[in-house]
Structures are given as C-alpha cells and as structure tokens.
Length: 237
Image (cartoon, rainbow, N blue to C red; front, side, top):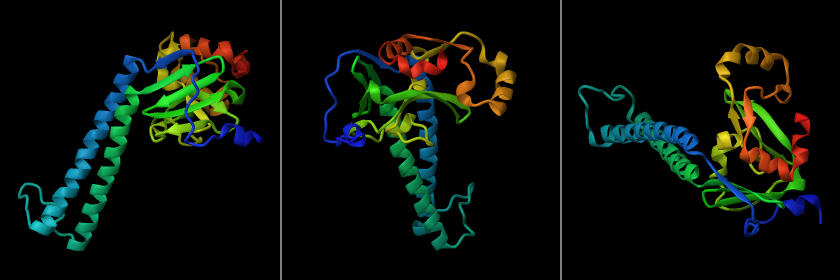
C-alpha cells in the first residue's frame, strides 16, 4: 500500500481506540476565543440587520427619518446590496456558531501510537511516524506552532471545525495546531513586551524557526508529545 493510501483514510473510518492523556483548551484561552465569538456575533447582527432594513425600505417602503438608508440608490442596486449583506451575515453566523462549539469541544489526545485531534464532532489522527517536525510560523501578527505531517491525516466526522484554528497557508489535514492550547503547550516566563524591539528586528533577518523561544517554557502537552515523538524536536537541540 502506498504511503498516501496508508495515511489518507476514508471519512467513514472511526478514530482508533488509543489510550493516553487528553488536553482541552484552558479556561483563559477559551475566554479569549469567546471574546472573538462575541465580536463575530455583533458583526453578524449588523450584516443581517442591514440586509433586512434594506429589503424593508425597498419592498415595503419603510423609511427611517433619522437614518436614511441608501435612499438615492436605484431599487435594483438596493436589492442586490441587501441580498449580499444578508448572505454575508448568514455565512458569518455559521462561522460564529461553529467557533462557539469548537471552543468547547476541541481536544488533543496524546498516545504512544499517535495523536487524535478532535474538534466539534470531527476527528483527525495519525501515527507519530507520519509527523515530521514542529513548525513555528509568524501568521496574523502572532506565532503559531503545530505538528507538520508528511502525509494527510485520517479525518472523520464533521471537519468544518478544523478550519477555526488552522493556518490558512497550510492544508488543515497536514497541520495540527498546538498554540491554541496555550500554557499547556508553552507558557510565558517573561514579559514579551520587554523583548519586542529585538523580536521585530529578528523577524526581518532570520527565518521563523531559527528564533528561539526565549520568553516561554514548556508544559505538560509539550513533554507528553516529546515522550513519544522525540524526532519532532530535533531543531531545538
């Protein structure tokens, strides 16, 4: 069987019954993402509300004296803008609901055989020999670390939740995010702001994976992964 066939199982497959330690998002980390959810919900309400108001003004003739809504725009254009606003709000609503449930149901099981990353009724798993390294990338103004896989992981169940914590430039079935687990992965031991000037200069001239994590220390999740997959940390030696 080819390597790609070995690691890319059908979505009808169930995750293995591996036994190990399971890690969930810490409360402090969940609070941060819940804040993002609230902001997303506010934008959802604005988009859907704007779409409804545009439609009411166009079809029913509802006028808001204190807030004229595109009164000088052609009705056909208003209809298009209303539809776009409503559809954008609906898509953002789906993302917001997915984000909320993903925050509460994201777990990472570390076992001797491999890992199982579960996310809102979806599962992604792989053996340790398919894991290549720990990648450290500077994306969206912050460091993002995770396990890079050689071949796509097995995936089953609902997979939409995996897009919440994935990095856009990488395939979500080839990268297992570790940064969302916060202090369980790496915890700060110094004030990052104190080294911000040095870090900014380093980012311009050095590759991301060559900049050491001098402001963080490793915790339970880190040591658990290293126990079974020492080869992932070769660059840190």
